Length: 351
Image (cartoon, rainbow, N blue to C red):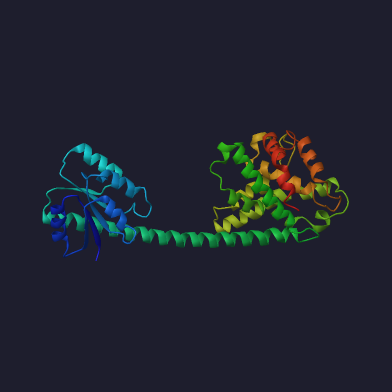
């Protein structure tokens, strides 16, 4: 049986309400709002009939207090009133009251209004619970899909990195660098308009595939201990276009509209240069996708501070100086400036 609180400083009204409602509901009557709030420690009603004109705490003040408490804000409240003016009704509805019942009230009106409101509240509660369960199921499925995407991405990326002496550490580090750079760009308002609809988690995931095209580059070229000849360097440069082709093949099979389009952008543009001398398309300045311009710095920084077949790793300071010296030629100057401010955070990733 549902519980109804009836709050009115007129005992006659309380007796009348109890008489009307007692057959259908558990009714608790009280002469003041203060008494009502004391009862909340032990009992929460399904509905409150609340008089407006009361001493100490009037109906509006009591309603305001109810709505300010997360535990009580959703309890439906009906105002009992002898006043019948538009301003009072407007204020009440604005504050969250669900209905008004004029005093003296009649038995049919009181019963039917309460029955209707409680029925509506029940429907709303059921639908809210159903939507909440559906949301939880959808969230669980999304999380499972994300874990699957992460696993697939990791396997594909490590297939590239583990072909020779290199490990997947480059993939893991550059993904973290991208995450740090994206956060710093957001915080400093650099390219904020272009990035306002980005999902950083998706871009970080996509970054793990930026070198997927290297899977078609022969080991003899990719891990040659000496400096590459011009012809060999041209073979290495094909990994950007090959990476796009591989991702396109996956997209055509899966129809994925999540992280793979970002992966294609990163794969195809992270070797472009700000001055237009990069590859594979020789794009210049802001014609280079922003994701690729960010990836370029993360990729080059990690390449500089890592041992490679033909050279030893540079120090963090030397790597930072190299990137600074190439500001405005190889790298986007605005992203470079942000990198220079937070570059010490990148140094901590490999420690």
